Image (cartoon, rainbow, N blue to C red):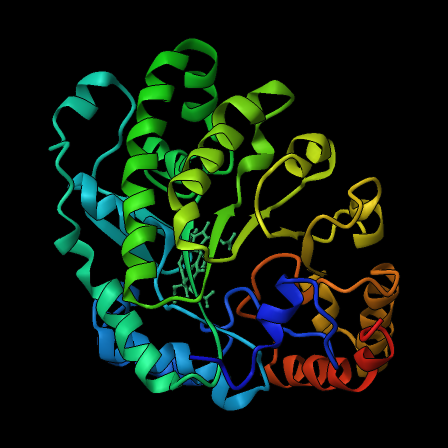
Length: 350
Ligand code: CP3
């Protein structure tokens, strides 16, 4: 079945589009009062994602307010912890807290290697409901965290700033890290497969903390596992988006990836990213979320700057460089989307 709005898929294939498609990382979430209301009623974030009806409703909330070109499943990269028999909690102003950590082979030995995907069946149910609600109007993005990024949480047990346990393992126990990453890769690949079989149109891997890895460590501890996931899923023929923060020192490795879209943050311009790639990738990004605190004129200027940085090449999906934060006024996002619809036709179609 064809989608009514297939701008996102067209941009991914680098076909001409009559305007630049847009969706926003974390578009369903804490900056929307209707989300906060539902979360308070349900008694917290985990109760939302575990309830397919509610999760579906939340995925649809931003689509009701804004002219977005994709939906994304309301879930989290850390639901995978449930497969490892780890209990996950999200505490206000603290973030995720896990009741167990995986720091040694003994920790890992305690886990049943036969993962039971029934435990996260709620994600697949949400996808089926969403597909039916979306009714071929818009594409739906399913996602996982990169094995490396998920590993940082399973090792630390929470949102750390220092990553001290992770850095310690990287120095002193690479062989355990490899086993852990292999295990997460198996779970993540199957989780993504299940999402595809439930109906998502596009798949995305968030490598939020890939930037921690310097030099060849990035290839060894992140890229290698992205390649494994990509090749296991190749036969499904679903477009794959790889997102990384701070890609600057990693361009050579990133550009070797066999993915359709690279999502980048605002630390590098799209034009600099595209240098030497022969426009192999569709690029997603990369407005600094801070711009959404500024005046409407400033927002327009910055949108134009990003469009100019695409040098009129097809294959651009507009997005922020990182997820939208709770302090952003929904009206500012509306302004951004309207301005993009107004000015982007000048930069596409070529
Ligand atoms: O709208 C969407 O983008 C879909 C859902 C989605 C969530 N998390 C919901 C969520 C997606 C795609 C994610 C990805 C995610 N989760 C990432 C990678 C993307 C990124 O932002 O870099 C990471 C690192 C996580 C892990 C995570 N989940 C953290 C660290 C936190 C707490 C702090 C924070 O950033 O919000 C979460 C909680 C979370 N995941 C919320 C939402 C809406 C907030 C929950 C709340 O209401 O308190």
